[in-house]
Length: 241
Ligand code: 13P
Image 1 (cartoon, protein in one colour):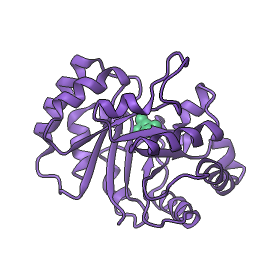
Image 2: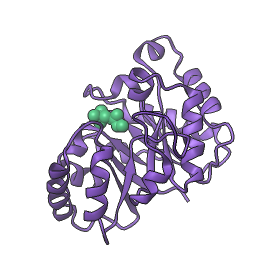
Image 3: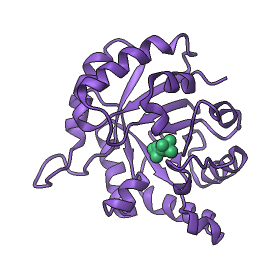
Image 4: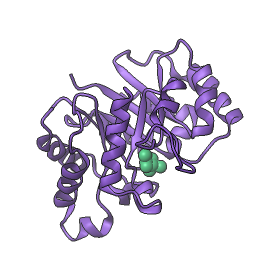
């Protein structure tokens, strides 16, 4: 069954103290969001521990923003799946465009990270999406298909979430039209062997546009950056109408 998943990607924001403050405010703002809506928060590595402790017994699931494919070794600056599961992490973002753009992530390393996540019982959230130049050149479909083909080699589609994040819509306020996001997400689904994979939209999701986005039939949730840093905004997004 396709699950509704609303995830906050905090990127490189919030100290441990700020994380605690956020949680207190967010949990009180959340109200009675319907049970079938999964809520995931992906803080920085340094805030995973404090979030894990403070989430005890509530419905929010913990996500990380990356993992390495080896369990341990000489990989300065990296974190492994075994380290994440020890902290109570359930989800992990893999292949975010910022990792691909600034940190040399390739489809090959994305594939290794996806398989490592699954080997540790984590559910990876695979991010894919085209640049503005690729969209303008009419290459959106080809880019998406190539990413899926390379990233998903030997990946178990029964334990997978995908986020369609058009790069030109990330952090720009320039949201992809909801009908266009719906169309591309339909295309992504058509490439999958498991049609029940939850596919999120990400890119300038806000309280003002979440209702329209979630009204689209192919869209199963959202991966929210900037607007997830504010407890009231993120609670409103989870409580979309
Ligand atoms: P914004 O919501 O800030 O555009 O970021 C989207 C994103 O990159 C989530 O992973």
